[in-house]
Structure formats: structure tokens, C-alpha cells
Amino acid sequence: MVWYTSVDLKLSEQIGKAFEAKYPGVTCKVERTGAERLLQRIGQEYTANVHAVDVVNSSDASHLVYWKDLGMLSPYVPEDVAKFYPADHKDADGMFASFRVFLCVIAYNTNLVKKEEAPKSFADLLDPKWKGKIIKAHPGYSGTIMTATQQLVRDLGWPFFEKLAQQNILQVQSAADPPKKLALGERAIQADGALSTASFLPNSGGITEMMKVAAICETHAVGIVPHFTGPIATENFAPILLSIVIKPIAAGFLVLSAVVTSRARFIPRDIT
Image (tube, rainbow, N blue to C red; front, side):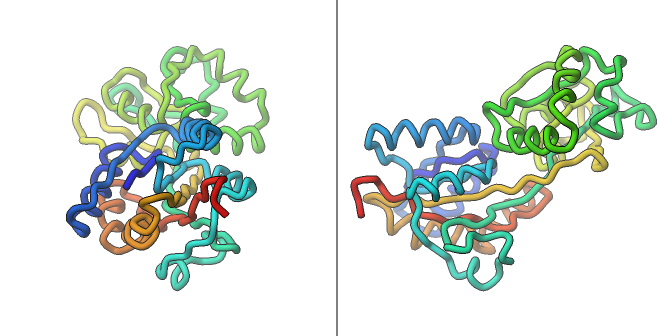
């Protein structure tokens, strides 16, 4: 059973091991990369008539809408989704539902920045005193950052990013990267990054404080792609991914608990 995921590797591997423990003899192969890279990979594979993935999750929830519009999804609604999910966290046609929700935040290293001097809004990031001291993840790699970028452009306009670019930003890929490098002292401020990652960092080498006043909510989603292992993915992996077996793992690792998962089944184009 192959799972394409944008979830932090440590967490996704824990989920895979929990699945294998529940279903001895079934292997969960975790393929982790950024959500925008997953979009490209799946598109390329389907164009080549390659159907290697059984389950996929994306931190860019629009991907599920896109795949649904292309006819790549079919309804699959696990019992927990049907019973407990609010309407705004599941597709009306049963194609997908929320996997987890967390915040994309501004944060700072307390060894390098005093609390009273820390930025308290996105506009504060444009202060000349932060030039050369900010780290930021990339929307071309991370679905979390793509979503955050869209929301900031909507609310602040593109000129905000043009001005931010003048701050000599250290550009990294994943939304999980800025908190890690922040804790190491490589930069003093993160312009964006996953609160879930920042929250579990050890309090050594610089505690990372999160400015919740400058936070953007992110919703992740999951889908299922059946081919020869379809029943394993739909009947076994999807339910456990949404179950109480996984929730404590995700909640303990991410601090902000999983909402649950989006389920959907990708249908190879040659199957009706």
C-alpha cells in the first residue's frame, strides 16, 4: 500500500507503522514530498498511465477539488466521516474530507529577538530592522505556503510580497523547514511556517515563540487511488487514518489535533 503525503516525514512514518501493526503482513510505503510536487507527480504519472499511488493527502485542499473536477475521484465515505464530520469539512458528493487543520504562523527565536520587539503582524515583517533575518518557505513546494500566500494576497495585496522580497529572505522549501532552522538560530524570524512543527521543537538552542496574532488557518485533505491494492486502501487504510488509533499520534505530534481525513478514490482513466 503506497501513500503519497505532504505530512511531515516523522508523523507520516508513525501513521504507516500504526497501520502495519494493525494489519500484519501489509506494508505501508510512505512517499513524502511537498504538496505542490505531489500535484505535479500524480499528473505526470496519470498522463503516462502509471497508477502507483493508493492514498494521497495534500496540504493544498484545492488539489482535491481539482482532481474531482477531472473525474479522478469517486465517492468513499468512512463511517467516522459520515457520523461525525461537519458539512464544511467534507465534500457534498463524498469525494473528500478534511484530514487536519493547523496554523501557518509568524514565529521568532527568543534567543535572538526580545518579546517586546518581535513582529506582531505581517506588516511588521517589512520593518528594515529585520532585513537579512527572516526565513520563509516556498509556495511552489508547500501546499501550506501556497494557501497562505493566496490568503495574504487576497487580504494584503501582491505589493506586500514585493516589499517582503526586499528583506533578503532566506528561502527554503517545506512549511516544516522555517521552525527547524529558526530553532537552530539560522534566522531570527520566520515569515511563515507550520505551527505544528514549531510546537514540538525541543526547548534547546532557542525556544521558538509563535505570534498567533499573525496566523493563517490551513486545511489538509486526503484521497484514495485504487488499483490492484484498492480494497486495502479503501477498506483498511482510510478508516484507520480517520480513527482514534491515528488521532492520538497526530495530536501528540502536531499539538493541534487532526480533524480527520479526506477520503476519495482515484480512478485510473482506463477504468469506468
